[in-house]
Every structure is written in C-alpha cells, then in structure tokens.
Length: 362
Image (cartoon, rainbow, N blue to C red; front, top):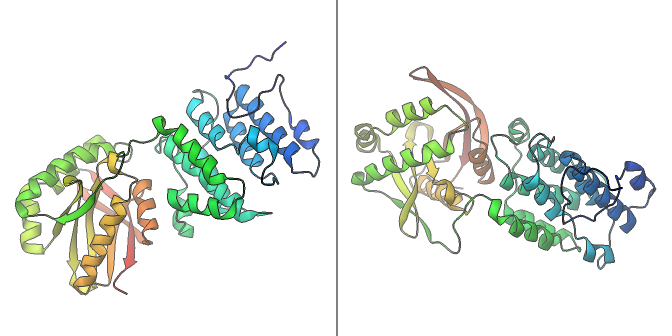
C-alpha cells in the first residue's frame, strides 16, 4: 500500500514508494559519494511528501555537501537540487512548517565550516537567493541584527554565479540558473530585456513629477514597514511642493531622476553639509518593478561622484531599520553602519533608523 502522502511529488527529486527515514542515509556510513547523495535526495522527497517542507529543504542542503566527481551518472539523473529548493518554496502548503529559509540559508552561508567550506558556502548563498526571490520578505526576513553586527554584505546574483562557476566542476552555476529560470513566473517583476538607465538632475518645475512618483512608490515599498497612516503623513509633509521648492532654492538640495529609457522611474535628493564635509542623501526611491537591475547602485555612484566633485568626503544617509532591501543595497555599495537614530516627526509618529556612511573621493 502506498503511504498517505500529503504533498504531490517534487519532480526534481527521486521518487520513493515508502516513507524514508534517517537510517537509510546513515547506512551509507562515512561514504559521502553518489549513494549518500541519492539517499539524501530520497529522504528529502519523503519529508516533503509527508508534509515537512522545512526538513525537506534541510536535506537538500545536506545533499549539496556530498563528495561528487565530474561526470557522475547520478548527476545526469538528479542534478544538484536547486530546482527542488525553488519547487518546495513555491508549492508549500499553508499550515505546514516551512521555518524561515531566508534566515536559515543566510546563517548557513555565513557560518559555514568543514570540508569544501567555500563551495558549500556559495551553494548556501545560492539557495538563500532563491528564497529571497520567491518568498515575501515581510513574512520571511533575513537576520538584520547579524547583518549589522558583522557588516555582512549579502551577495548579488552575478557574484553568486561567478563564485559557483569558479569553485564547482559540477555545473552549479548552470543548475542554479536553471532553477531561477524555472521559477521566473513567481519571481518579483523586473524589466525584461535591455534598458538604458540614466540619472539626470531635474529642473525645479519637475518637482511635481517627483511628488507624483513618491505617492506612487511609497505605499508599495513601505506597506509592510510602517502604517498606512504614517505613510500618508510623511508623504504630505516631505513632498509638500512649497517645502520642496524651499529645499532647492535656499538649502541647495539637489534632486535627480532615475530614468529607464528616458522615462522617470525613480528619484533621489541630496544636500551638501559643508561643516561635515559630507553629502546627506535625503531620498532614493525606485518603482518596485525597477528593483534588482542595478539602477539603485548607479544612482548611488552618481551621488558619490557629485559629492566628490565639490570636495565632500563622504555620503551619509538614514534608512528605516525594517527596510531590509534598502539596507542590503547600501551594504553592497560599500556603506557601513554608523549608529542608530530615532526622531519624532510629529503626528504621533517616529522614524526609527540606522545611520549609514561611506567615504568617497579617494
């Protein structure tokens, strides 16, 4: 009689006609070759099918620690289980314990030890990237405390791909890329094809477009970070056109558009603080569909060069402590944590932020 499976079989793992236990993996002894790899994958399938997706993911990670050689027959039948990880993340059922894969893979990657540590670390980051792309960051956040304490910089897609290609003879980068392509329909929307991204300082009369973009972007990027009432309050306060005009005319605040193919898709503003020899980045926002294609990094580079040209030595900014995506982007661009700041902004609301800073101009 077939077991009473709770989940349909994962097509990227070997099928099993019985409930697998840890004894079948332990029967491999100290051998970590093809037999161990296949037994671990079957155990992952069994755990998944019996309703334990978190344990299934753990076994996929364990399978990636197998000692396999190039050209192994088992890899032709069952490639490294990146697609299995993505499939389980997408097809999980509510009520079945998933844990927090983003947190798990972050910790696994950043605390890796043992044989082939570097390759296994990058495999964990590859699984982290899949989880980050496929799961709701509000429900499955990373460990921001660790990121701040250790100045941990989460890797980019290109860096993961490059390191997998460098370290693995088992075509990790190809298998991971296939998992990303398979999961494309569930990933965050990004512009398709090639786009020309530019940063352009705006004319004062274009501030109305900045205001329109802000009212379009903020409710989408801050919905899970601050309340709807605070979003509205801050938009009305910080994007009041007379106040924006005053910033430009009397404080020298510079506004710029981030444009995709000539169309404003985001904006930034910064101010030179001469007594501190620093530029303060007040604003940097992009439409969510334009995230993840390097536009934010380009905008930060533009600010840094603008600051350096007028003799400023650093760029400073504040970022909401719960805005993991922005913090990740700033760390990747070389910013460091510089402190904490909580400000009363009126209306019964506060801004609870990190200070971050980066040296520029040499």
